[in-house]
Image (tube, rainbow, N blue to C red; front, side, top):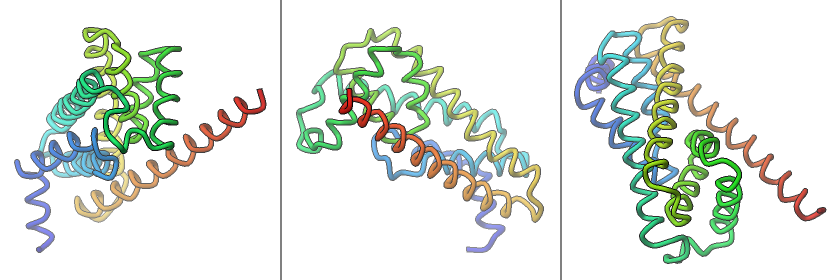
Length: 203
C-alpha cells in the first residue's frame, strides 16, 4: 500500500467508518485501539482538512456513547457475575472498585473512567447492575464521551501542527503519542489502585 493510498483511506469515508467501529468496540474489548484511531483521525483532519475535525469528534463521541450505553444495559440485564470471566478475582476487584467509586460520585467516576479502558468497562457494567438511574446515566455518559473524543482528537490535531514531514508523519507521531499517554495512564492508575489496596489492608 502506497503512502498516498493510505492517506486517501484515512481522509475518506472508510477512515471514519473504521474509527467509528473501533471506538464502539473499544467499550467492550480493551485491546481495541479506539483512542489511537481517534487520535490518528484528528491528526489527519488537522493536516489535510479532511475529514472535518468536528465530524471526527461527533462520530467518535457517538460511538463511544453507544458502546458505553450497551455495557450499561448488559450490566443492568445480567449483573456482574453471570459469566465466568466476570467472576475472576481481577475482574471482581475492578467491580468492587467501581462500586465504591460510584458510591462517592457518579459523575466524576463516569468521566474519569472513560479515559482508562478497563476501568470504563467495569464502571459501565457496575452502573447498570447497580441500577444507576437511566436518564442520569445517559446524560453523564454523553458528556464523558464527548470530552474523551474531543481530548483524543485534539492530541492528534496538536501533533499535526508541530510535527514536520506531512500528514502521514503527523499520523504516525500522533499514534505514538496516544500509545505513550495510554501507557502512562495505565501505570498511574495501577499505582494508585495498589496504594488504595495497601491503605485498606493497613486500615
